[in-house]
Image 1 (cartoon, one colour):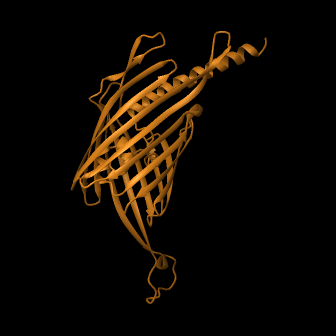
Image 2 (cartoon, helix red, strand yellow):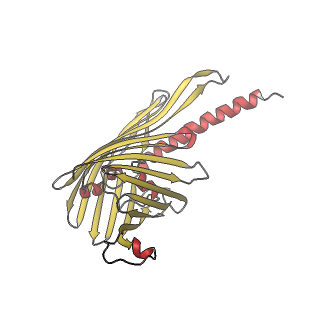
Image 3 (cartoon, rainbow, N blue to C red):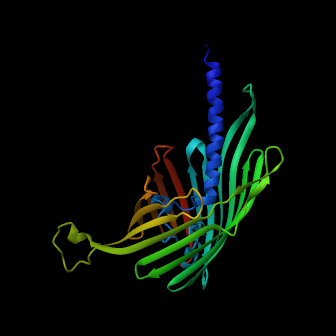
Length: 321
């Protein structure tokens, strides 16, 4: 018995697996944010009450009302079987809140073969999402609305559709409470199937609620080092910020279940931050960011041994005061 038939069978299994995984990833795009914020991933997606820049567009649009500066953020990640995640967003504050525009894509490529394992060319799996939203802020409440247009393609199937998201934020001193309802007022993705027939795919709704507590922590480095305190020298103070957050996914559609995602972030002098979280109390993640003037570099690493570990990178540029 030769190994050739086995190799051919394995190749087909890999190709089919790639298509299935990418199709599931594309479906997940409609249910979850398309990785538009590395900070959120580093905190285990405990972000509904934390979101506040242009990337809030796909997490909680109410966070757009709390924007302080304009920002341009670009993200890249490569996941299971070379599935690529790419997104870019731009947001700008206004006198009443803020608005943002964004685009995201999940994509992959695979080899097409026939029953005889003849190579028929390369196929592509992709899902593009175009987003726009606005947040209105009036202390202590922010309200937000965003719309997303989906364009899904799995050669030769093509589907498209839209969905609306709404969100709210309530702020009391150091505590923030967030709520977001995704994919409301939407029907389904519709288009043409492999035989040219009409096909559709339901866009499932998703509801999330979250809380975040921000605690300022200042440390006198001279005192902590044990050195004698010289009253003639100004103390060196490290201004630290601790954010503890948690999100709850509330089931509003069939096959959904209640899931909790805790996370935290420690920032030092608004220059560097470290993060950790536990997505749905299953996937552990860590992350960090480094800021220099108007530029921020963010990194997250998501541990998922059952599928694959994922590296996520983003670069943000801030404008204005």
